[in-house]
Amino acid sequence: DVMMTQSPLSLPVTLGQPASISCRSSQSLVERDGNTYLSWFQQRPGQSPRRLIYEVSNRDSGVPDRFSGSGSGTDFTLKISRVEAEDVGIYYCMQATHWPRTFGQGTKVEIK
Amino acid sequence: EVQLVESGGDLVQPGGSLRLSCAASGFPFNFYWMSWVRQAPGKGLEWVAILNQDGNEKKYVDSVRGRFTISRDNAKSSLYLQMNSLTAEDTAVYYCARDIQRTGDVWGQGTMVTVSS
Image (cartoon, rainbow over the protein chains, first blue to last red):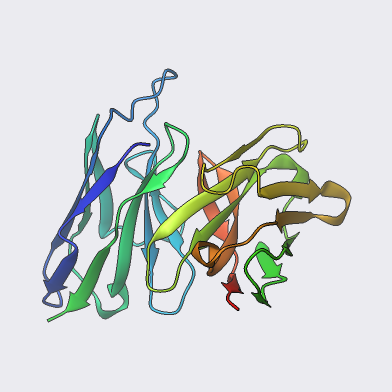
């Protein structure tokens, strides 16, 4: 299985400051069709996961533009330009290029 | 409103069986692949199974293959997960998710399965 490694696992952030989460895969996530199936999810306390980003950098409808995704191959990043209180939660990356789909361990974002 | 509502979670003894359901509304159910994803208490996410629009192409994670069966009824806009030979390691919240761009864009609220004697 493809291993997804996130860092850091805990991320205390000051309100209004930027935050960055790294996600690395044990294999390239570039599919034969040329797409890279790397997504990011947010899970607020007590809630279901919510997709933020798909195919590396495509932001879902309704997701604030302070969230952005980037990367290629095996190295990916989720950035929050200015953290707000509602961004508290656990963030997961997930690859769907290889079966089974696999998630990172999760990064817990909290306010300092 | 696009919505997925899971049901069927319960407390079951090791070795027992359970059938989960997911009722979809607000979108053409038969257009989409559908998945089950689970989350053990205090743990991360695990993609369990996926099923295509017609129900004839399905994939499972190794830990459930041969014990779990994913199925759907497009006439009822419903997704199912039949779980047999349950063990404590299957204890989790089970989410159904609509699949697009090879990822879940809509998730249900989840249903809790507890395997314990």
